[in-house]
Amino acid sequence: MNVFSIFGDPVSHSRSPLMHNCVFKALNIDACYSRTHLTEGSALRDTFFAKALSGANVTVPHKEAAYAQCDEVRGIAKTIKAVNTLVLEEGKLIGYNTDADGFMSAIGSFGEIHTALIIGAGGTARALSIALSHGGITPTILNRSRGRLEYFECEGFECFDWEEFSVRPYDLIINTTSAGLSDNELPLPRPILIELLSQTKGAIDVIYGKETPFLREVKVSALPYKDGSDMLLEQGVLANHLFFHGAYPIDQIRSAMKHSFSF
Ligand code: NDP
Image 1 (tube, rainbow, N blue to C red):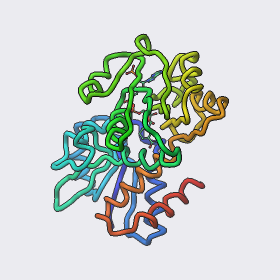
Image 2 (cartoon, protein in one colour; image 1 turned 60 degrees about the vertical axis):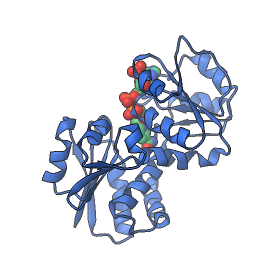
Image 3 (cartoon, rainbow, N blue to C red; image 1 turned 90 degrees about the vertical axis):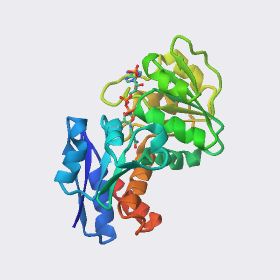
Image 4 (tube, rainbow, N blue to C red; image 1 turned 30 degrees about the horizontal axis):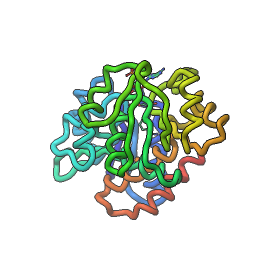
């Protein structure tokens, strides 16, 4: 039996075990997927091998630690410098980032997008800014503080903190902050957000499973919007496809995994 797990701290909230086990059951795959609460990111590699895993996902706050402990990193994860999917290949730990491609699939329904404003400058903002840029969409990054903007400046993206920012139109507004996850905060001062929403075509919050204060404001503005569920689904579909080296068709994985969202 192939054994998989998700590493994170916290990890109890993660929907990944449900999503992947649903696929294993539907496609008759002899495998199971569990959670691993890992406090020390530096122990990730040893824990992976000690549990004899065939693959894993990595969530907050260990994606950078996972990147550092792979034998090889492939695709967009090399630029993002963060890994959310690990696959064992001939005894070696191979790292990928499926958050980026998962997000790009999720925003397909917004139609043609040329510019996007990313609110937040953490690991998710990094993945999304690179993915957008590779997809021909110009990202601008807006964060409450300057500290984390350095990475984006080095990538050549336009960056602002709240004080420097002045509103202009963007096709898509993306909340990648954790504001609203376990509090009732907006990711931006309300007057700035309201003005931004009056000049955009759509908005997405990467947080899933709850209506954040950000999404409540978006709803009031009557814009097309999404939460992070589609991104979650798509990153999971791509990870599952990698776990078995492409042996199972993407469409079958997606339809089985989608089923787990109805529970
Ligand atoms: P990080 O901790 O790396 O970054 C958090 C960012 O949010 C920072 O820029 C921080 O600003 C900002 N921030 C936090 N609180 C506030 C606040 N109250 N007001 C304004 N800004 C704030 O987190 P990640 O990038 O790893 O994750 C961010 C979110 O994305 C999480 O909620 C996570 O659940 C979600 N996510 C969803 C996925 C999906 O599949 N749908 C996939 C991956 C992540 P500062 O620099 O000033 O501290």
